Image (cartoon, rainbow, N blue to C red; front, side, top):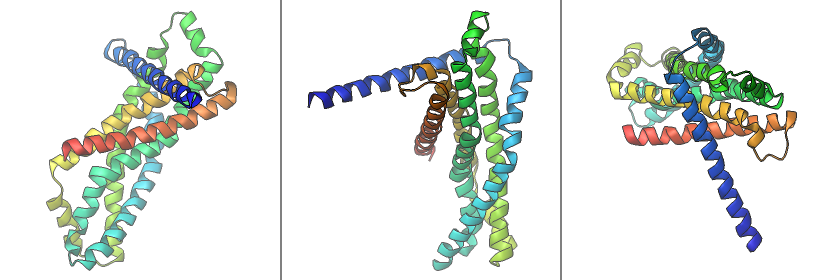
Length: 262
């Protein structure tokens, strides 16, 4: 019994310690982001890595998601005699929910894992310590460009996902299932309001900084993680933890924003 209580207490203390590290890391990064100098060439480079190189994946994921959503809604709405609502149903589900969330999860898997592994390798090879020794701020040098790029790219990638998803829904609904073209397009115009678009934008902005923040912080504090290992195995474990924790944060924030803005 005493051992179980002791283990529970140690786990609670570790959770609080990790939360403190993440909070301090975010505070340092926000201060550097708000103060000059801003290295625009690094920001552009990160935008290319996070945004441009993710475009094809996001377009394919969006198209197939829209096709699946349209197929499922067609079957459901047909049962209730409301097939004219299929355009609104596809657009609303993509813009308000599926677009921001699936885009964020895809970026987490492709970009977040790479950032965590990169920073983690720099930590175990003592490159971050070397930057500090020669007077270079590692937060400004390594993190600010990534955070700015994440905040900029996620809304843009979400917009691409939504457009591809609506086009995929059109392909299935109109071309394959025979829904009227005017019916589908009119549903888009009549069903979407500014509040729906605003919800998707707020979610995508929030997901952008959360992904980079969590994944970069996990790699940055690799040496303070209680994984029991360091080196290459430590990098692999912390990268997995970063992706899982980022995904959970995305789903939690998605619920919070949805509950506030609905």
